[in-house]
Image (cartoon, rainbow, N blue to C red; front, side, top):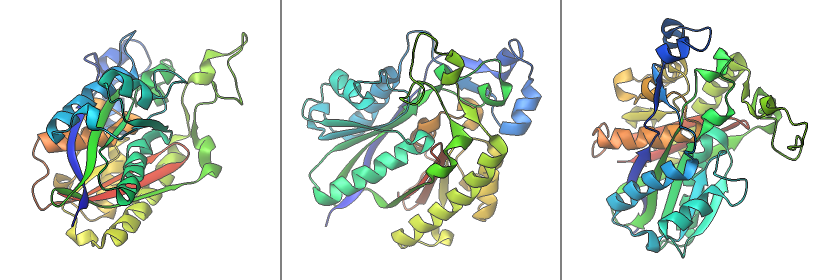
Amino acid sequence: MKYNVILGTGSSAPENVVTNHDLEKIMDTSDEWIVQRTGIKSRHIARPGEKFSDFAVASARTALERAGIAASDLDLIIAGTMTADYIMPSGACSVQAILGADKATGMDVCAACSGFIYGLSIADKYLKCDPDLHILVIGGEIVSHHLDWDDRTTAVLFGDGVGAAVVGARSEGHRLLAVETGSNGNLGSLLYIQGGGSATPITKDFDIKDTYIQMKGREIFKHAIKNMVDISNRALKNAGVSLDQVTKIIPHQANIRIIEMLAHQFKKPMSEVFVNIDRYGNTSAGTIPIAFNEAVEAEFLQPGDIVLMTVFGGGLTWAAAVIEW
């Protein structure tokens, strides 16, 4: 019998690292203020000319190599991103062209931070229809282009980076037990980018500030905890796994307080929770796949682990996945 499994992972981020001390020089903030409120010490920020596909392709190549799959054997590329190279073509199509994945279909999923697990959900369902497919799922952003660097309430939080995973059906491997998603568009105004869409098109009078991320942090915090807990419980139920059986958690890297609150809600010690927010900040759709890849590389995940991944993002969206490692 074949199961849907993770065949390989990879991640990539800009070499340019911006520390809290660097930010102290350009805005009214301090390392102490940022660390206490967010847990972030540094983040990777793209230099001029660097784009989404640069890091998506790098992470994809690593994932493909580890999976033992040639790009030419890919059937589907799903990119969870809101910062593709262009409005059109899609980020997935840009990656397809560079990889030479000529037979693959490319599509983007715009679910903000939840994009990667949304992509896993789509891949899981495709594979249940056709187990012979090989699917590349990408998640990540160049979110720094949408930050107001005079606004410390948002600019200190985010960073750039991309992660990827190759998914296929095998008789053994790192089994994908369940993937669940959810959203509430009525709460979209809590976290949004106004400009650039058809509601606020780019004209000669366009205000660049409309392209910056707008966020109501306190309300987001409340909804993030509740919905990540709820969607995680739903995923665990559908996976036939109890919370007690979960041995490792890879949460959305948005704020150390949210991560610690999740650990408390799940009654898990922080030693079982993977954290890299201190080095990356919030890379939106990149947080889960980057953390996932780093957890693999660091051997944080061990054979037999039951892994819970959970995320929350603009839309509002949320998602969770359960993997038997």
